[in-house]
Length: 97
Image (cartoon, rainbow, N blue to C red):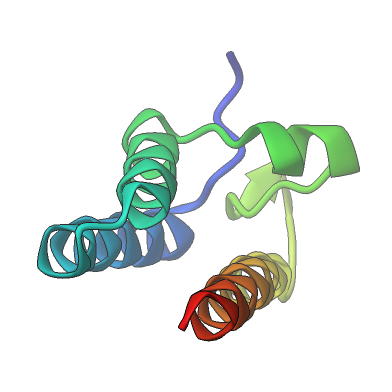
């Protein structure tokens, strides 16, 4: 597998993954455990299936050519996906009350 996750994006993913894993123990949520584990592992191996499908690459260079703003796009995409999942989770919890 070719590395497609840059250093800043990698540390962001690993930190967010650890936070979600910690929250899963606090809330007894399998969803956050799975999501946090998946995000942490993608940062650890520097490869993301979603980035691969969309053709994104947040490393500093592609074939020796420097890129601009790719890391910010990757972090923004990760935040939006997590935000949507958290909203869905909260709506499901409210419906169950």
